[in-house]
Image (cartoon, rainbow, N blue to C red):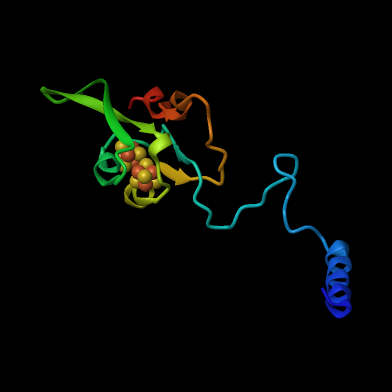
Length: 131
Ligand code: SF4
Ligand code: SF4
């Protein structure tokens, strides 16, 4: 390597040594995600009516409507269902959020989804509230 190139490389080295790091000390530093970041899906059990639209529109088969009880409408008795989300297959496309007309779904800024037990990514919180 020529002296000129060594001098240039050293100059570059000193310059970058004085700059702020561009990486973060994960997991010890706060990670700031982009404004429209699509992270872990969340459901509001109170807003969720169990209409089932999210199950139909999800392209990844994340959502399964499960029976949670019965409701009487006049003489008729209908089965009430609520969604269970297998979040380990969720691709965060946002389709369910867009199509839920009750505003029960949202993509949060949570991104730490690596787990040893994938069962911990099965979200059943919508089952807790049956209207
Ligand atoms: S989350 Fe929304 S679309 Fe899905 S069942 Fe509940 S109300 Fe319907
Ligand atoms: S964000 Fe997309 S992949 Fe995830 S549950 Fe909703 S529709 Fe399915």
